[in-house]
Image (cartoon, rainbow, N blue to C red; front, side, top):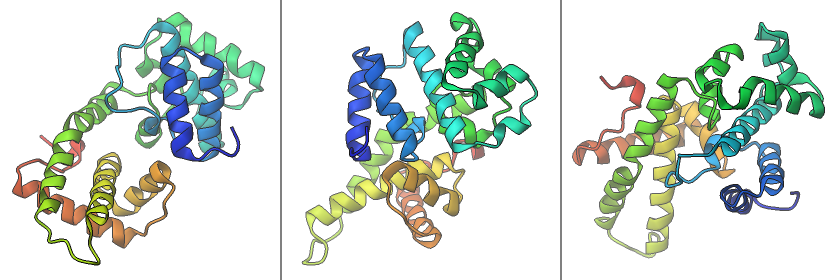
Length: 236
């Protein structure tokens, strides 16, 4: 999958995955992993979540392939030999151990998360390998996405258009702020980590200060419209 831009690869992945084209999905997944894009950013928030057994296994496999690439030293913290082999073994070992760990869908994600000693950041990278608390937090973020987008869009409608701030500029700013809001939720509101997440999501490098400024503006807008922007972990 060399030569494809990340957005193109994401589109190809979604199409192949939902069409059941497993080899094409795997090739796209490995291409996205090579570009540093974690599985959490591969799926549309509008995608269905009632995946069948084969799809759940594939989601699990993609998550582990990401972990193998992004956290090469993590296996040193894993207690169980077969789990370490899942993270460090050959391609053949990987598929064999993946089948064993998945256990035909009878082993829940949270139990595998524990066996792999995954921390919250690693789970947030993943699409399927999440404990119940992490899954609930990210589901709550997803549930607010459309309302937050609408609030940010309405705020920008009130900004006067001039030669240096056109409708196209407003659309670009809306998309950036919405993406930074999402990344901020994933990062617990920390500007540095938000900037890192934003780079993973878009490929664009921004600084901590710029991320903080945008998060502050988004928070102001959402407070005015009574749409909370606080990370789910901070909510009571």
